[in-house]
Length: 154
Image (cartoon, rainbow, N blue to C red; front, top):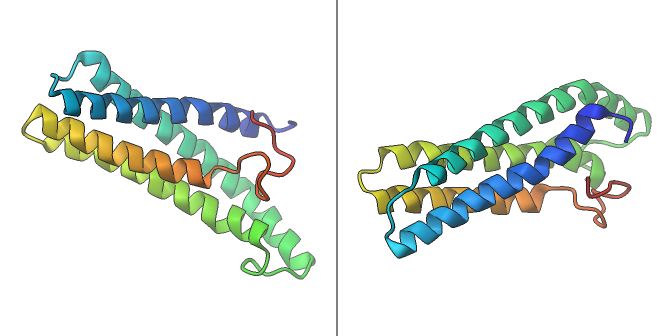
């Protein structure tokens, strides 16, 4: 991998998935057990949000720097952005779905702070974080798929 920003973005993906998934599952477990929120659980949900925003920032930088090359390549080859699924994925779908996923995580953190009871806080974190995680898992270009061809696990 020649691009250090892409390498860091790919490595950070694992921390984001672990953070969001861990925080969502811990909150779900706390809700089901009616257990009080412990400091490390709250910290994990905050760290997950921060990791998501760092990942989004890196992704937006990469998107902005590569957008001109995507547009010129697709125009030069005669492809329109919507006719080639790979070009459409990278120009619209990946970034759009990741923004939605990170918005879900951010909204989950915000609405959990407004909840009056601890189980209410845990339920909101669990729902929004796990929904965000599902969107992330769907939108990641995994190796072996058409979008992840030539990409490794890191």
